[in-house]
Image 1 (cartoon, helix red, strand yellow):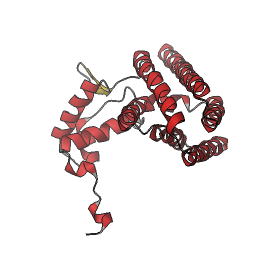
Image 2: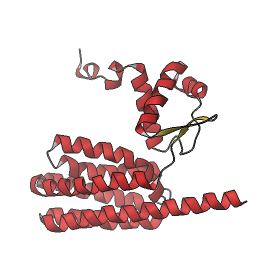
Image 3: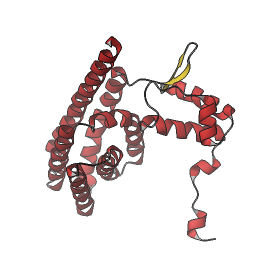
Length: 236
């Protein structure tokens, strides 16, 4: 058996309801299923090529995670993005990001930091493109932070941060739409790399804390604008 054939997708061994759950969860977090969108069992079953039973089970699991809400007489809907959810996730993320940058500053090799600089430059180049895709920008931003996480050499910390990052994906899509925010991220990424290059832990912590605080303000601004648009539509 070749090495390629020996490699398998973990989802191949998961129960069908788990596979459907993970698929729908990913689509919600990445904004493919929009906040407020109704989840039609028949439509989803046809789209995913499964029966309605695993769809129903997956929706129940998503409801427990808070990603889906059941509306009386209207069925299941994708949960709206709330400020409380934002506050909860960013409060935890800030603490863990500080720990991650401290560990990374101590453990990242020169090669790791060169890779981080390359990731920072790739993100900056993408930002300059007027036709830059939001998904591509989000993935480039994730890749930058991923290198820092891997540099901690702490597998459990990486796992928790990746889970939080998934929960932040819906918010990230909102603020990456703003061109000014993209430019700010380029400047912040550059400053973080410079601090890591000289192993200045105190400065790196300050920059990461500012990075998360700015993200919080930017997303809140995007949510304010979304609320204003929705209010204007309801008045009409």
